[in-house]
Amino acid sequence: MSRPVPVPTELSEPFWEAARRGDLVVPYCPACDLRFFVPEPACPGCMGPEWWYVPSAGRGTVYSVTVVHRAPGPGFDTPFALAVIDLDDGGTLLSHVDAGDPDAVVIGLRVRVDFRLLTDEITLPYFVPER
Image (cartoon, rainbow, N blue to C red; front, top):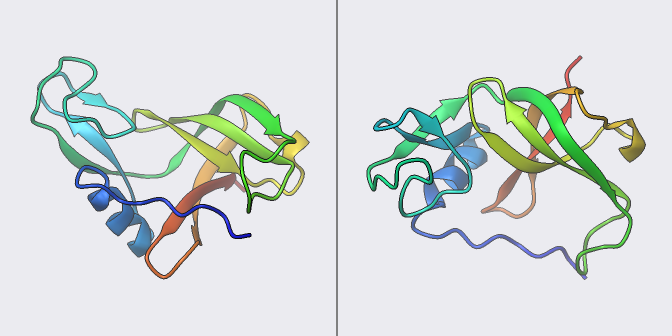
């Protein structure tokens, strides 16, 4: 069985397009200066409807992590580290962190984005330890 493939929506398509190019982007609300993720119809900070995607350097720190030992569905290799990443330039993302050994992913670990091709249309942002 293969891993489930994300299905881009009208809100998320710019994120997936950027990932295909090897760029990380996050939603940004100019009304309240908030970077957030996941994309929503309105900013979760001020409920403003006008936001757009801005580039992220893709570097950050592991805020929280769990090692998943039971696959959430077919196509996932376990164990894997799933972490909340505090991005240096604002906002947070939930992502896989590939450090070789999932137990090596700890709170405070410095990471950078690393894109992995899932299909011809979908490239996933993973994070790896900064070197």
